[in-house]
Amino acid sequence: MALIQPGEYQDRFEKLEAAFKGAKRLIVLTHDNPDPDSVSSAFTLAYVAKNRFKIPSSVKYGGIVGRAENRAMIRVLGLRMKPLVEEDFKEGTEFALVDMQPKTGNNSFPKNRKPLIVIDHHPLRKTTKADYLDIRTEYGATATILTEYLIASGLEIPSQLATALSYGISSETQDLGREAREKDIEAYLALFPLSNKKLLANIEHPKLSREHFITLNRALHHSLIYKNAIATTLGEISNPDFVPFTADFLLRLERMSWAICLGRYHGKIIISIRTTNAKGEAGRFLRSLIGKKGTAGGHGMIAGGQVPCKDKEDEACTKIEDEIVQDFLKKLGYKDAGGMTPLLTPESIHD
Image (cartoon, rainbow, N blue to C red; front, side, top):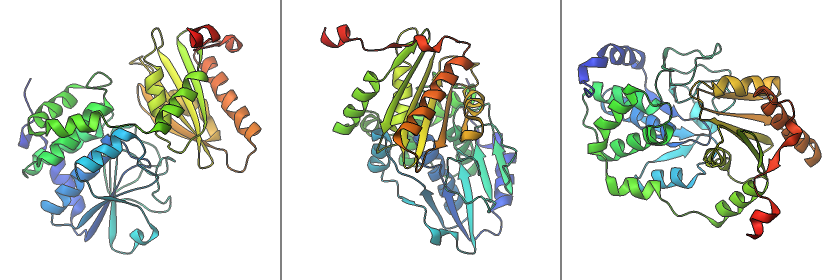
């Protein structure tokens, strides 16, 4: 397999260069509660903008960095990113959005503004507008796209950045086993020799908080199974990343090919869907499932969304969650959704 050559993507790079022309300051924005794919992509674009085009650049995010692996990545690699604040929108500052698109509900970019650049691997939304758009749904990770820009730039690739990007690709594709395409594999092979293997190990195997295990315990005790589908609800959570982590974890149960997890965070019901079906179109599935109740996005095998639940009584929120789980099963073709069984039976708990 041929590795990426610097000249292979020169045309796209020249278009990116044209988009940057005249920019005085740049903020590269991740989606809220950013994951390694989003973080590594953002720092790569900021690195290229600063070192190739001499544009002062910074990386910002909304929400929190919650998952232990994500916090470890930022800490051990010394990545400097700050929360987005109102003062960031001063005149003369341009925005680039990576691994997400405006007006999708998963980011803090104002709906009344247009970004300079959008680079993403999720399906293009009709509402997405930017001076420069690069949407590649055939890629398994946005970090792969940014790796190509980095190589085309001719800049030196620091070990710190190579480590971030290689982890961004591997985590997004589950070690190149989920939705990874040839371009993702090429990018990973180009980056891995430059990566710091010890730091990668520290990122992939961080210490976990007690709260992590408490939430996992709650997830297991609330998990219900119906044929090849598993569903769980976490109730109120302090970390929105618990939802996608739990969905990924539950999908590892034998014979399961669909998993859904729901948790409440800051007045929203956070939803994650995972499937082993490469043709599952999870993003479209979840958008159809939620409908006008909220917002959702994703691609083939993973999807996430949120439904507002602010100022509602606990009983009302629970009803919404139950309806989502029932509709999830119905969309899978299971009409007798009342026949779900607990993952943990009294007998298994006491064994």
